[in-house]
Amino acid sequence: MKAIKNFDQNTFLAEFWQQQPLVVRKGIENTEQLLTPEELAGLACESHVESRLVTHFDNKWELTHGPLSEQTFLNLPNSDWTVLVQSVDLFIQEVAALLDYFRFLPNWRIDDVMVSFASKGGTVSAHYDFYDVFLIQGKGSRKWQTGEFCSPDTALKPDLPMNILADFHPTKEWVLHPGDMLYIPPKLAHYGIALEDCMTYSVGFRAPSKAEIVDFFATSVMSQVGGDTRYEDTQSTLRADHHEVNQETLESVRQAIIDLANNNNILLSVMAEIATKSKYSERDCDDVRDWKTRLKSGCVIVRSPLSRFSYYSGPSPALFADGSSYTVTLELAEFICKFDCIDSTNMDSVLAMEGAENLISELMDVKCLLVDAPNTALHTATPEQLI
Image (tube, rainbow, N blue to C red; front, side, top):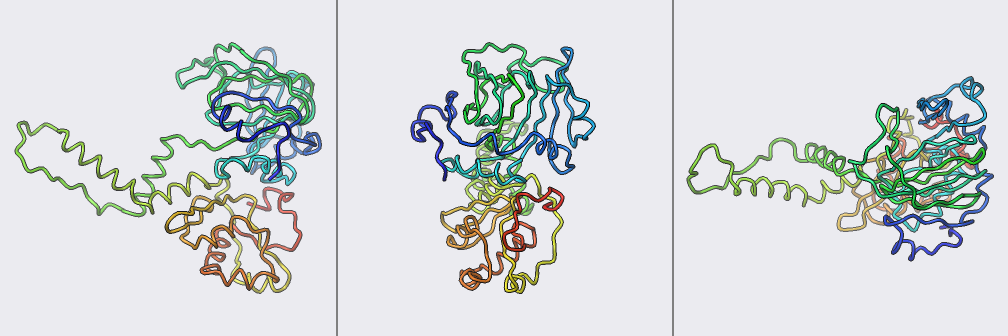
């Protein structure tokens, strides 16, 4: 794990995390060399990469979703526009390395690294997010302001293609230079504007809504319990009114829901979705039945950079991968999350772990694990090659 300079993890967690903003000066080195504007524009032109272009010309906001065209960039003026590209960490190894600074937080909470390039005056205006974000300054400089905490009822400007606060009253202000970092807690109003051409790396964190959790829960219940487990009515007294639904009935329904929530297998399935569901779930799958032979011929097995992995260490350990849960030993779950590569030199020791061969085959079937030539830089592959 890399260490952020001028930053104490314990103090941050106790006094700032999800509470108040924090600026760290020169916390991360070499941020100007991670990515060029041209490389970011190239990603924004890819059909499998999520990107947006925000312009503010003649007091009019416009939002264009990617893929963008080369001609679009050629037609842009020298100021007042921003291009934003999601999940750049999946495709650029140097950007992915930024995540190593944040391993003091649960890995499953990290979502992605969004990278933006803003020309002078470029901004997405005042807004708030429902998740934590660390804003790391690359090249150039950007002014940031923060205001009050917002709620779903906070007023937005009407008839715009993006969410912009109707009223923003800044209470703090900073100018970030290369290597500086600003932490923004959830729902805090903030506004950033480029003082010159600049790039910002936004490390965002997963924060599933309660509605999403209930949706995952319902899906898991239907797949594991089905429709044959029914409500049971235990009343033993006459009702005064046959139209009435009384508190006893309500408690029976409540208990049915609690019983399902207490089912650990259902919760593991829910947690697998929350922690590891990938944005890139639809992928072409190769025939990898001969993976052991390919390892002996010099190939290696690696985790797909498009996949997400976590594990549960409690009773009946489980591996979570791309939204699915696999019941395995704790040793194997930890190994899959942490290994560098599997090759001919360690294949025998890996396969000696209980359930390893079947699990590796299953993960390769769904392209969570990949077979490739040694030393292949998967993070520099095009999205089309990975998806």
